Length: 484
Length: 95
Image (cartoon, rainbow over all chains, first blue to last red; front, side):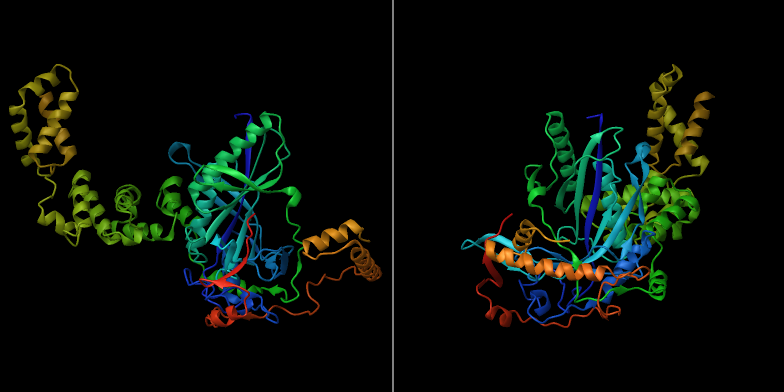
């Protein structure tokens, strides 16, 4: 395994967030009764002509600008010819030689903690195309049922260079891309509904070899977990084949989530010859500088720019910054917390959002936007930790209270439940004296050199204080008294 | 450039057009005639001329993103050979 290098390229179909189709005025709403959103253009009735949806082009421009790509001043729609019942025209309108977006790159964070590293994945192109309908192969008296509601739905196909070297990098890329298309509002990213699906081109080669191995393409992966499982299985399979002396044949394969295996759909020999040619029904798509400038002006601060600001201005680690910019919701929440707690408290804000809040949301299966604790409330709570009104431990109690709606603000909860930290050294000293007198055995153990006994004494004092004594002061006072 | 009989048959297969040998042979003649025409045109010096993707030198017209097509399934399916549960039925196809 170690002498092999894995090479992965990814093609993603992102369904664009338009209300109507790319070339017709039929609705794109998900879940409608079969064929109620398939109009004459989508059905390819004779004499119909496609008219391009401006919003779909807006989306492509947004994407191009957000990855630092060139938005082509002139791009051309082409016919990709093949026969399948869910494609009534006998061709798919796509782009071939002149795509709308050329080049660009995406910077991602792979792994976490000490092992985290940054990776740049180059993009080859992104082009506009229409989706096909759906074939249902359940038994209709030995026939297939065709639903053309999805036919003509606008897609942006986003193609990378073969830059990824592991399934982890592939998943990190897919997640970063998924985050980006949602961030810039061009795709809802709903993977269950097929709004965002990935094909992975996978090959292996001996380490150090310049040429790529023969690749196989895994089609239609609609979850990050399947993407990882499918690539891991495929890599294992390919290495095994080569080591057994067999050659890899170029092929398209499907991943079966139930067995965790990939199986061949078609091999190169009967691969389609699509006979692309410019679609005479559509004129070239011209995108002028003004149009690009207008879209540029509408773009929000991008995840990459935000990440940079979080590390440079707020002093967060690259990992924290990447986690907090995974989606616009998380970033917006975090920034609202910092707005209340202050930039000086950015690090505790990051920790509370990424650890405590994320864990609690996860446990309840809630999204950031559904959090019962608002960013303002959390910011207020962090302020009280920063000014020593409460300890971190008590803060967790206050957080829980806010979560359960036991108060409108951290201050109110602290007041109502009497959680204010005891910082009066006289009061703490009294507690310490009390504990020392009542725990002579621990004192003796400590003096005999048992460090653990000290912690037991701290615990006793905190217990006597109902957790509200300032831990640092308790430590200091105990040390002083035991030394004296 | 000219096409072999094999290529003609392959194109016919890709286009799902059934051809017998005689038809393929005559089609080969027609197609190669067209290729000769193209060859003549390719003799013209087009240095410095930007290739066009369309015969008309115009840009694509665009429409606003709005739903304008109502549901007309009933009318469309009235002329379909076979339908069931709102679906168009076709001979079974599984890859």
